[in-house]
Length: 327
Image (cartoon, rainbow, N blue to C red; front, side):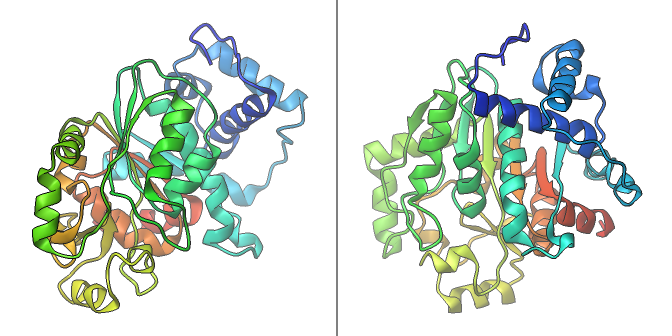
């Protein structure tokens, strides 16, 4: 959408945009002015979009008192954790669906909308890897951002759950019409010595150096259970995951272990990784963390405590879990 309120997007993209605006207004309880500020358009544009969403049947207004308590979740989380913004997607698991598997598609759409809200012309954007980031990249609408760059945060890896790690960065770059800098190295190598040598290779070093000056990061955070994607993708063994848990690791962000305070724990296989360091992510002014599933509450809290989040996108179940969590 352009600043003057015109909309050159395709019908499908426009429907997705109208749905997101309706979700923010009717689902999250944001005011028309707050939505306009997020999207950098006039309040009148938001009014027109809400009217169009009703006229086209995108919104069917029905009042259910059970949901009224959820309307302020995003504001309460923003205040509780001193974040710049929080986006909450409506959970469907309460209706007897499959929990995280059912909630992830809507969370991905809300996070994709958040990306466009956050990214500004000229931004250098670091993109991580995983099921959630893959889902976000799959549903992003085309929305060019002048002068934007996208950098891959984790070297090339594949797993049975998601395509190669560079695919996330490439897809998001394509949606933003941004230059894409993929990381021309494996995400993990066989020895510390080989990892050190590869990091000094001129091409790889120049790509890693770009990660020291990111404006935006787009990432998720995983748990440290035996079925974590970090292990499924073959980047860590079950023994390494168990040792990390015993040492106090509670989450994994960008293939780096987090302790409960969000500090990087340099445990195996950390020294063999070709990936961004947590300090590089922490240094970025805008850090979007998209997380789905109430079992990710502890890792999400760790990331927040560690200064690795400025903008948070979570599903309703996780949002409620975070609201009841202690400091």
